[in-house]
Figure 1 (tube, helix red, strand yellow):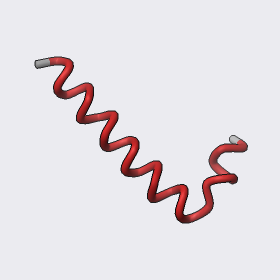
Figure 2 (figure 1 turned 135 degrees about the horizontal axis):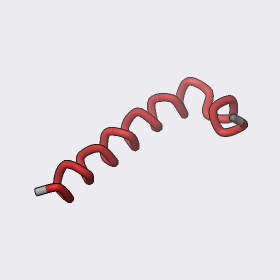
Figure 3 (figure 1 turned 60 degrees about the vertical axis):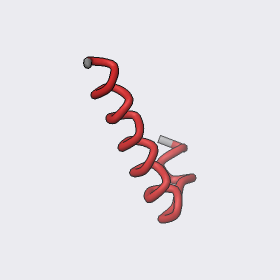
Figure 4 (figure 1 turned 180 degrees about the vertical axis):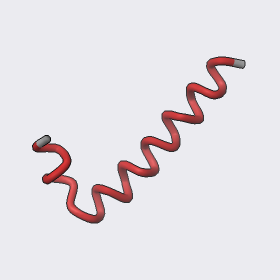
Length: 31
């Protein structure tokens, strides 16, 4: 049950990461 919510958070992070990457990933990666 805990792992399920954990993986869901990771998926959401990956999705938001893709959105940020399309808007200019290098800026976030440098930080």
